[in-house]
Image (cartoon, rainbow, N blue to C red; front, side, top):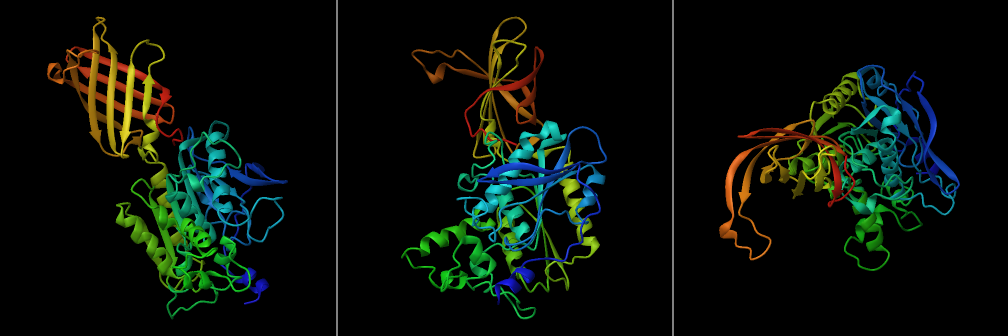
Length: 447
């Protein structure tokens, strides 16, 4: 297929554009060489307090497209969710960013830079940094899905745009007909509907994405050499592997809604089914919307309504899962009261160990220990049974001398990355603590 025709047809959906003006337009979120990457911000028009936000990722085969907002996304602002629409590097833009590459992982680096920027500027934008979603179509659907599953993958984080102290995780994903396993794009095709895109060719979008696009190359050639250890095959196989959202799926991934047309002749529906099955395999239970007779886009309004409802339901829930609970491992203290606080340890993502050190109103020292199994959620008060330990020694330690007795309960609520509320309730009364981190031992990026 000629390159110009590929550009016109490939992975581009016929989405109408929004008739709504951005609140803040053309804002730079990162500088790559001589060129800025930019975003448009659409403030929520309903609700109070910090609002959730959805990052929109456009289609175009990683080759074309821009951040113009589709009209089916815009109604989110009327339902209390802000929207950020971003540009990211395209494979057709070689040389425009100086020496910086425009092949993968450039695209996901840009997406993560934008998410970190939004989180870093949450107060200025009036958004809740713990409630960020990603929604994209086609190539943008792929990037939204990859952002959702690669929250714990340092190799895909990148460093452009800075704000590296902030997490690039998202708390909800809507993936409209995004590619997943690049090497299976052609093997996944069924007839009907067949395909109008030669994904295996050197000029195919996936081949261009990973930079394996010279004469004689392409995804088909790479698949034929899947076991070939000769350079450069392992290098490009790894890029295709890293670009696959399924590679990074684990139990801490956020809720997903995946929608795909049964008559899609550009990206086979099997690509989305693969992602659905992988997420289901780790207990993520994604919502899967198979759209009868729909091609590559052109979904009916009821599908868009399901996507919006999903994002509103997920991002405005009273409690929302913590994406990186290990980041809460460390010391937390009450600034107004010296000498007491909590040491939190999160092990394997869902085992919380809480140690209280401090004193009662009588001045008596108190050392408490409790554990709780279950994923942490923002805004949820969790009850941790606490035991008291006495007869401990720094020297000549003998575990048999330690006396452990049931003491009471710790009620712990994580407010956001840097604030938690704790209430200790025992036989001799109640202690309320407003906690902030003193030092973090675990990964510092939290959301």
